[in-house]
Length: 127
Image (cartoon, one colour):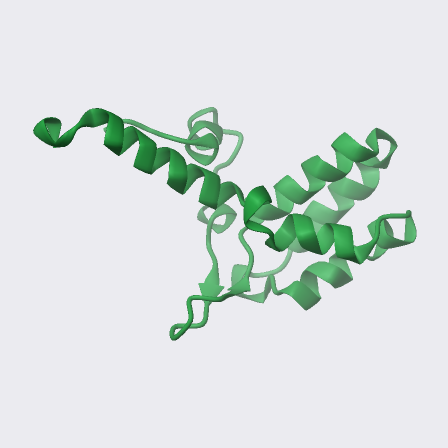
């Protein structure tokens, strides 16, 4: 077995240890996400820090607040509530929401694309 992607690498380094890092819920008919994985919350916090390093404590509190929720309760409204201090600290909800929901910032999507590239690289004869 060969590991691929940022999330796998974080688990391999024991930076991530719980399955709730990747757990989501979605609508069965449309596959639309209802709750967001903790890895995506961590990505939002990373982006906050890259834009405003002085907000390290607020970003940490944001991750801690979301992590305290059961994975199925990590909805957009719950994430927005957890981001109250970040919003009060000057981040717009629109920016945070973009980082949470836009495919360009989606960690699991990036990893899925990396898996497809790795499989493509293996070639059909090695499968």
